[in-house]
Length: 61
Image (cartoon, rainbow, N blue to C red):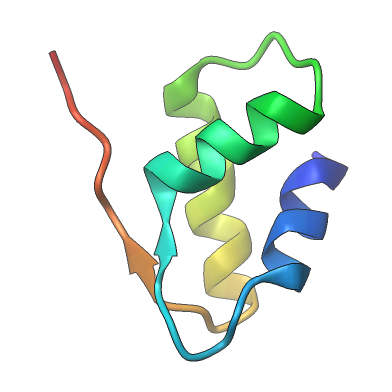
């Protein structure tokens, strides 16, 4: 999903990517039928490819 790429490209290299913050920001900018879990997986994979640290701060209810 291109919105994830844009979000991560604009993210600082010195702080971890908050998964919950990324999901919130991406949902505000893009319309998607992906679930939060699917977005989380894509965010983690894309952040890893960019060598960015990830903060796994989502909540399972």
